Amino acid sequence: MGIPTAKDIGALIRGARCARRLTQAQVGAACGYSASAVSRIESGRLHLDYARLMQFAAFLGITPDRLASAPVPTGASVATVKDQADEEDAVRRRELLTGALAAGATTALGTSTASAASAPVDPAAGLEEVLFRLPSAAPVPLALLTQETARARATFRATQYTMLGRLLPGLLAAASATRDAATGHEREKANVALARGYVLTAELALKQHDDAAWVAADRALAAARASGHPVPIGESSRVLAITMRRSGRCPAAVRFLTDEARDLDAREAQTGAVRTTLMLTAAYTAANGGDRTAAMALLDAADEEIDRWRAATPSGLFTVDATRAHADVYRIGVHNALGTPDEGVAIAAGLDIDRMPTAERRARAWTDTARMWHALGEDRKTFSALRSIEQEAPQEVRRPALRALTSDLLFSSARVQGVREFAARTGALST
Image (cartoon, rainbow, N blue to C red):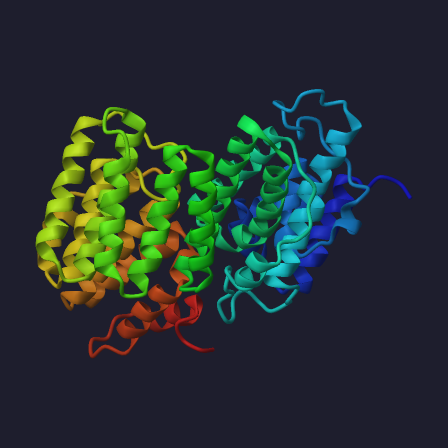
């Protein structure tokens, strides 16, 4: 059998897409391409590198054996992996990108052919089962593991949650196997990657209100502490505190976050930025517990940290950057939680959401703005914010919390043109 050409690969992608009754726009949105680019891929006029090909295969449920003889394009190898001509490393790269990730896709989400335009797909479906029974995987080079962790992080920040749900099982399996096989400094690095994989798993589960967040956050913190690195410890502490808040344990979560922030070295820019993110999360948590005094004090403390480390960037953190804009978004959220949304209006007016660095953070800013307007009874402004979320991140607006907000808007006394169609399109209204 000959090696598949770009046209062969395109035909395979087109067939899988049609079998799932997906449009080119839907596939493109999930994989980071425009509809016209997907059209060129399917016709063989646009060539995918190996990593991108695996991304399409995972989303469309194309099994590894159907792509087993596909060529690995030049440049697809990890440049930092030593001895790229080594056959064992080549096999390991292929196993990670095809076997482990494809196994994770079928474990996490199955092979349903339901239309993406009907009932919302839960990207976190099956994560709890995966956490207790990881797919089998062999250890991989740390450079490759780091690259794949970064790719998963970028997928989250781009709000491609369906794709992330397919990537995580294989990533966790590879990171766990690599950690178990490593010793010394290499084991510390593998624990960092494993912690970040579990942080992403917790983040995804939290967005879908899935109880798997508890298990993932606990495992993230265990791996982070084993690594000894403060940044992943801060990341993991933050997501664990959010799971505590979601279960109603706000005072305990605030104490946990402030204790973790206090333990971080305040003399370094990197850890100072991490301290800021913990304080912001603690402020919102305190507000959810009805403690206005603590919430406002924590916001002020976070502002002081931002002024002190204005040039610092908390590299590795998945959802929060220690900037004034992000602190302002948290202030809006705090006022929403405290029942004083009117105090957030002036803050929202000064936000330049378009300049925020990631789709996930822009969508979060619009979400807090939508909640603010909804609490103030401004239905048209609420709907405008919801439409902005959809434009930024179509998968974000299909989250349970935002579908609930859309449903409230749909059944409010005011008539807002376009809400019913929006509700049907985003899964808030059964079709």
